Amino acid sequence: MTGKHTDRAARIISRCRQIATCTEVPGEITRLFLTPPMHEVHALLRDWMEAAGMTVRIDAIGNLRGFWPGLVPGSPRLLIGSHLDTVPNAGAFDGILGVVLGVTIVEELGGDLLPFAIEVIGFSEEEGVRFNKPFLGSLALVGKLDADTLARTDRNGVSVRQAIDDYGLDPTPLPAATLAGGAFAYLEIHIEQGPVLESEDTALGIVEALVGQTRMELIFTGQANHAGTTPMHLRHDAIAAVAEWIVAVEAYASSHQPLVATVGRIEAAPGAGNVIAGHVTASLDLRHADDNARRASVTAVLQLAEKAATRRGVHVTSAPQLEQSAVPLDPHLTAVLCRAAAQACHPTRRMTSGAGHDAMILAPTIPSAMLFLRSPGGLSHHPDETVLPQDVEAAIATAMEFLAQLRDDRTNPKDGHA
Ligand code: HGY
Ligand code: MN
Ligand code: MN
Image (tube, rainbow, N blue to C red):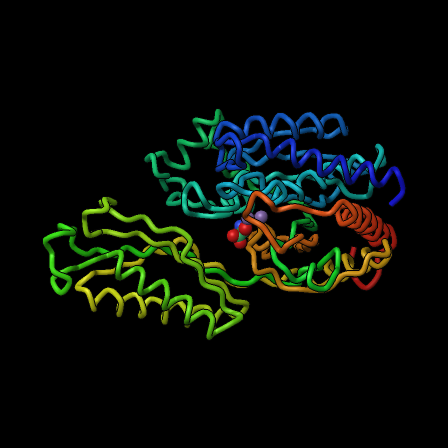
């Protein structure tokens, strides 16, 4: 890397780490949908965007939107973005990196205008932590944020609509958060969050598709009772039922790979050591590249829950949270991205994303492409999540080449693609 390029990679990483200090929990990175630290994130990004000559606004769902004009008014727009929220105790790069890279791309233009405009978007919510529903920011952008979602409440009983209002935004014009016409492509640059690129010693991945996801909550209802006086054969122990089910889920997924199934959160009540648990809520996150296989696995895993519960006289119900089909990304745009990486002399490998991303919400509406950066240690959704400066440089060099190819496509259209 030349000195100039080392600097820009270091600046990008430093900005991500600066944004990481905007947190609800001192000492860790936790930033949910439109919580107070998001104001600090918006202020930092707005400063960087405006210093780059962009005009900045926050839309009705709290997406931060920086605009760099094209050569002529009304030019078609390239969207570049990712999300600004995090999981609890997160790393510093999941989501944020894609937005900071978007700002750097505009900075690297050095004031040049292209035959298309660029809109850098920091989505307000992708992880789905606060309201148990992911992709709120990108769903609003494509006009799919429905009234039921706006009425969803968090663990404090605050609705999505109220959270928007509490943040100081007006949810009324939510339809205005949707994309005006003219967006011709979406590019999301994101860490891989898995071990594949590192295992192949490759800096960049080109995403061809994102796996489908089912997220739901299972509620196990048994009978709270005295831990000391209730004989084992007379119990309706909800935690014991969930424990048997979790091990059965793990065994099922292990024998049906590439299926992945995760029970990441359980909440037991009443939660005292001397009381048999009468009520347990358990999350289920189940993913597969093939939608039929995923749906069949959901059925099988719910039957396992029924079996573990019934044996103990425990009742189980399930509440769906997300049914997201697998999403292919745009083959033409993906090919342009591959060519751009090759042009920038950075080898890549094509891959499927096991993680969900805003690109899967935009792709049915706007041709979308994703560029992955290697995740050292294959680690993510963890404070030790990181990136390598040379991979950040590879990503920004590839992105600049991607813009050059899109510019050439628009100035000398060939094979029907402008
Ligand atoms: O959970 C995911 O797939 C992503 O990190 N939101
Ligand atoms: Mn994530
Ligand atoms: Mn992410």
